[in-house]
Image 1: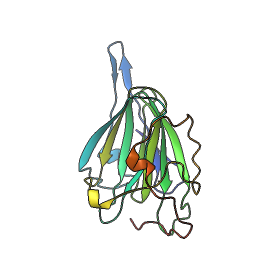
Image 2: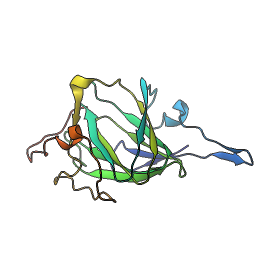
Image 3: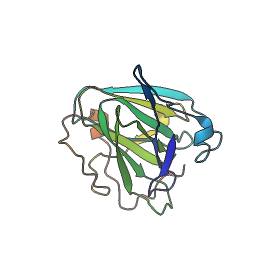
Length: 183
């Protein structure tokens, strides 16, 4: 695993180094020792699989508020996504800035998203599968989100948005006085 910092403090892209031969390939998806450089003694409490049927679909931008704030390690198992993390941390030098990376079943990249970031993605292909590892269990009372097309962040989604959930469509725009979350 190769851990690469991004321009947003605490957010990392992770490249894997599959071992391939005539039978196929073997890839390590998680190694606590190798991730210790960014988060010593990381502990994941929940693993989820997200399946998205159609290209153009947007999911997110989601996060959990304290005391259930969570870090996530995300990897695409099948298909391709434009994966986005938005810094919502109060007092952060990169507050309301975002970082995007293409994750795919072929490129073997993952993204580590720390607490205090919203996360979302757009399917760039049909039949996408994303594997999510979470440091905190989903807590409905602490669930929150921001609009995928909020003007305060202006994410240029690569495809026309063809589908988004009613819940994601109903998040409120970020108020200019929004001070962020305290992870």
